[in-house]
Length: 151
Image 1 (cartoon, one colour):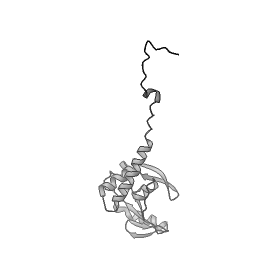
Image 2 (cartoon, one colour; image 1 turned 120 degrees about the horizontal axis):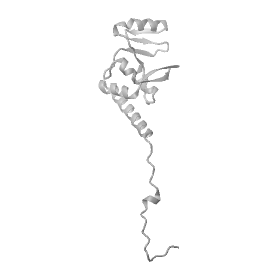
Image 3 (cartoon, helix red, strand yellow; image 1 turned 180 degrees about the vertical axis):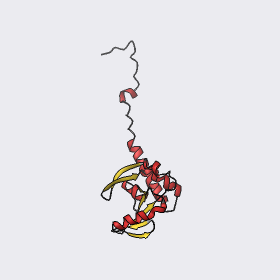
Image 4 (cartoon, one colour; image 1 turned 90 degrees about the vertical axis):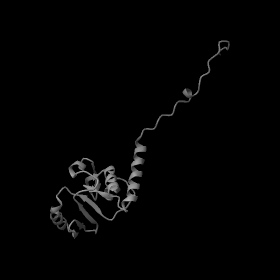
């Protein structure tokens, strides 16, 4: 599943990132399987859990995420969205925010602000506007006095 700022950007956060983070449902000791897949796709390995794809983009293979539950539980909080020509599971913004708030690295602080602002904007936009009270109901009607004639 796509996580991190790449996932946030796919969902509309106005930011940039240099890498792609993929949360993989494998024990970390099986990173060799991922290296073999990357090599078959003409990728180059930069570290045991980092592959560089053909255009030079680093792809980080992540096996657990700070601040979040296990993969199977968090997978329920994904949406299938387009990324690099494929529709893949993407972790929802609320969960990305939760993880970034748990980690709180220096680089995460502006991300937290941008994600929070987008979520607030979406919540405001999705609330139905309250109907304005009708002008007639706002005006108090004066009682007609008995000695006044009505036309």
